Length: 214
Ligand code: ADP
Ligand code: MG
Image (cartoon, rainbow, N blue to C red; front, side):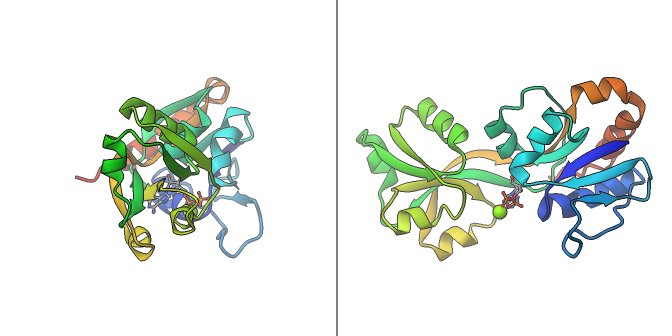
């Protein structure tokens, strides 16, 4: 049995064409099914649905042989014990610092002020500001980062941005581009040794189907 960990939503949706290239079709729709284990047209391949941030953990501990997860999640997890053979170029976005349009972020940086930054991505944020030599107080949140500056709890946020519409709707503007983000294939290293042929087949099919945007 080969088990692939996916999260519902864009990761699941954007992985389907890659699975198809590997001859794998998921037989149930996660949006309507309540099942957490989804069968596929291949009796020895199944998909498990987990929280996006739990994908590396499932693969690390062997709950799944493979998984698809964002680079953001991988950096926050640490990636220990995971073989990362492929950038899948799906779920593309970028990590950014954003601040209210009436907060002079560049001035605060120039003056060496302490900046209060709310984020779910504390490892990425800590690394970015340390490298830049900016003093920050990080406030850990689990969602809706945009709300933190609006309530006066933070000066800025570190969050994923794709179109920028959510920022704009909340009177926030991007002030730093931290890094490009896309989803990766991650593989349990012991599983790769024990089930080399079927796992290699999936990696190779995914590699052949990846579409690198220009
Ligand atoms: P969750 O809300 O549980 O974190 P999402 O489906 O929002 O799950 O995000 C899953 C992954 O998709 C993220 O870890 C990130 O890599 C990527 N992602 C998040 N937001 C966007 C976006 N706006 N555009 C493209 N990819 C995104
Ligand atoms: Mg989300």
